[in-house]
Amino acid sequence: MKTKIAITSLASLSPLGNTPEMIWANYLSPKTLISTKDIEGKNQFVATIPAAIRKGIDNLRKEELKYKSLDETVLMSILTSRKAMEQAGWHQGDDFGINIGSSRGATQLFEKYHSEFVATGKTSTLTSPTTTLGNISSWVAHDLKTKGPEISHSITCSTALHAILNAAAWLQSGMATKFLVGGSEAPLTAFTLAQMHALKIYVKDTGDYPCKAFDLTKTKNTLVLGEGAAMACLELGEKENALGYIMGLGYATDELEHNISISEDAICFQKSMSMALLDTPLEEVDAIVMHAPGTLKGDTSEYKAIQQLFGDNLPMLTTNKWKIGHTFGASGMLSLELALLMMQNNTFVGIPYVIEPNPRKNIRKVLINAVGFGGNAVSILVSS
Image (tube, rainbow, N blue to C red; front, side, top):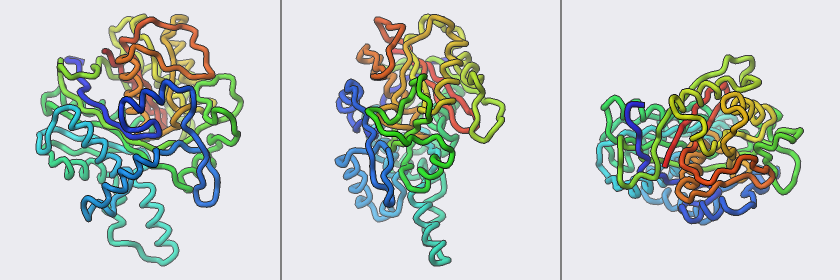
């Protein structure tokens, strides 16, 4: 990277809460936020947004008549984008770019409209405009009255970190000076959960920790889905209000053997991490927030990739999916949030059932990983 990029704010809403204090308090607790919920007559393990935060989403629907028909992915994006902009000191009408994505998109609305079509042979007038992927960034731009470019995309579970990659290109090229980036996901629907069960990766067993992300001794897949959204404001160079800095970016794609495959030792992660680190000495990386979705192959392949790169001197390793589940397109940004909080508080947030073999005294540089179906990996190096 020619110039480091300042993260001047990060706002989120998730099972952890929607304020830094609430989120950090939840991270310091060893309890998972995964529970069971009745979804169309079937109890499912999921991680849901607290009722008080959901009330805020419902209130947003009432602000404008047009908002009433929007999917939750869009509404969550608007709420978190407003807060991120305010925290960064940006204002409505400013000239900044927007790049927000989602893995599944307007899942709730799409399923609703499709069910209506199957039952009646007809569909609502608003079906197409409210279920297209471009909804997210364009509606956020409408709400914030921005003047910059508006980009929406879906790159499966690495969507949010790809938004950072794209924004970095705009910032480094001089085509923009500020960018709002993030991801939003509302996947807790019967059809989406059925798809995960069909892949045989969803959790079935009960226990203190339904999702055993990065438990390398588990014998079954334990993926659990969660919902949430997170947005960050990015600016080029040193900034007094920076929460942290993006120092390196990496990306790579595995050669596919199967639609959801990743290579045995996650070559895509080996390449993306190496690219993000570039000239950074390996011993300077204090921690890695892993993708680690709780699946057998996903967890072990990423761990093998880290071993291949770092050898015996591994950084501290963690993930947040044991606590909040996998939020698909939003997961990378929520991992970035964890990294920033650990650096700000100089405290490592581990996994209750995993003993950390290489504790470090300080947390100054953290690597964040994300990968989606198709082996599409992204790694981001951040520093305090």
